[in-house]
Length: 328
Image (cartoon, rainbow, N blue to C red; front, side):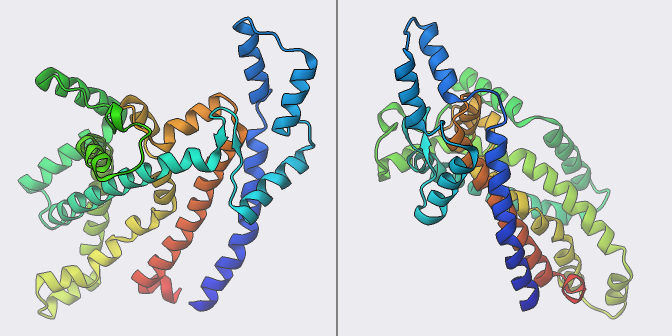
């Protein structure tokens, strides 16, 4: 096991370097850059810039340097100083832009994940152990609806229904007086009073999908020979169920950590836009459209790194949970 962990860590290091290089290449692939868009917008508004001003801006943003030098400065600042670069669009450092939105994004995503697991796991176990019962049919039907309904459409329906019934618009996470304010107990309470709707909406699709996957996996395990043998030896149904079938049926949940960690940071982008949430997802979309290269590249690099780390954690958890994987 220790050899496996060391080997995976050694592989991760060159993989992260390759990911950072690919990320920097991708964000520079579209024609033009932020400065070109910025100058075109100024000219469209009637403001003309002479060549000296343009060259000064190019030099200020470091766009006159070769590709390899831009990449080296960017990645070296990240590794050595933790500096993710400068956001042209926000006219602020990327660290400050993400620091305002990252805690909120992670908090909402974690809360949604906890709701998904608390609701989905018991329902899936009961559905599998009571196959073709009324309970099973009911939640199978709800699961199909939850999977088939896009989250952003559900968000629109929920906002419309709440406004029609109560006259209260649930959009955004903070009241106007708390936008841009420092964190305090009052701001936290204000966020929690508005966070329940996005948490429930994001959790719906995740709950429906997890119920279907866990139910199907557990049904397969319950039909296997080792379960029949355990029952024939007189073990109680609870002991038979929790000893191995449920442990092995949880494998799909642990194997999804590879994309679970980046989803905690990116969040549901379209849902966040519909509900006007101050999370990282809309920032990534705006930065991509505006060709804000360092902000876009930093977010993509963070998401890619979390995918690699999440996959590594998944492998460790699966090896610990399933003896077959550990012995293999």
